[in-house]
Image (cartoon, rainbow over all chains, first blue to last red; front, side, top):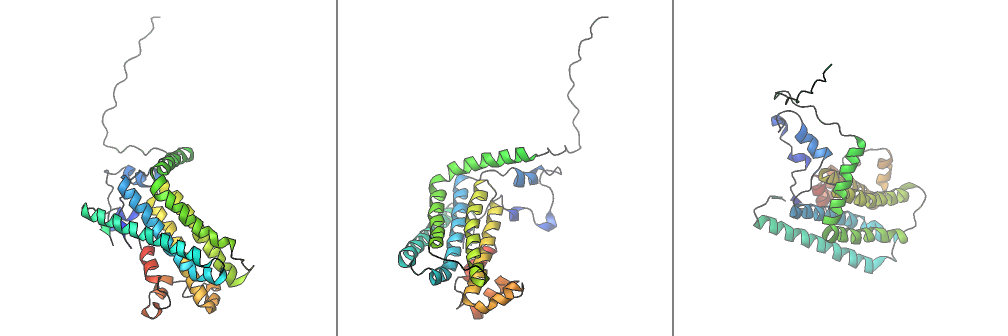
Amino acid sequence: MKNFASHADFRSLPPRAKLVAPDGGDGAAFRFFWFEPHQEDPPLDHAIGIDLLVAFGLVLRAFMPWIFAHAPKLAKEWRKNAMAFVKSLNAEQDAIAKEFKAAGRLVKT
Amino acid sequence: MPKSKALPAKAAPPSDKPSPPKLITLPSFLATEGANLDAGLVQHRDAVLARFEVLNGLFYEPHRHIKLKREGRALLLGALFDMAHFQLHFTMATFLRGHRSEAFASVRKAIDAAMNAMVLHIEPTQFTNYKASAYPFTRMTHYLTRPARQAAYPLATHLVDIHGI
């Protein structure tokens, strides 16, 4: 699973041992994270959006054995569509990761 | 008595004291959220939201075919599937409003639902432990990543990886 780092992510805050307010003490920078989130640059935002959908594709796959046990009529067509779609999401995620790496941007894997 | 002229306002001397933070009221918070949502809907309309709707349709379709029982494990599994579907919407709404960390928190809830459902579907006898809030439902990622269970739960490693993001 790739994870496109976001500076709005909680884990991008300073390490606990070095936790100091980045703006000299009035806390505005921290408030900015939570109360006034900003848009990321479009490629990073797009990458995070695809990341989220890939995760739900996997969640859907995890439910498939239960779905097929209870909805045999749903069967082949749905499964074919679902698997093809999940595969296309994964391919897009891989392509984005390659682009990011080529551009020297951080990608956690 | 002659009218006194107002003195020009003097600029406040620079202070070392940090300025008090601005109070963010609920209406102003919601206005920011709304503005971010509008921007997100435009920015992600083609690439992300179009794919979201496909995924949403795939989650919806089984609802038309599955008749849930009114109680017990069968009801719970249906509820877990519904919850995962709801989290798909909530994740996207949160992401569009600019809260990416919270979006991943919602993904974790959906993954928790999926992991619980996998175990309850493959090992029906675990329902007793679910009702008692006992292991493995207290440490699901630990349970699913044991080497002995990898054959029964091939997706577990991927789910646990994303859960850790």
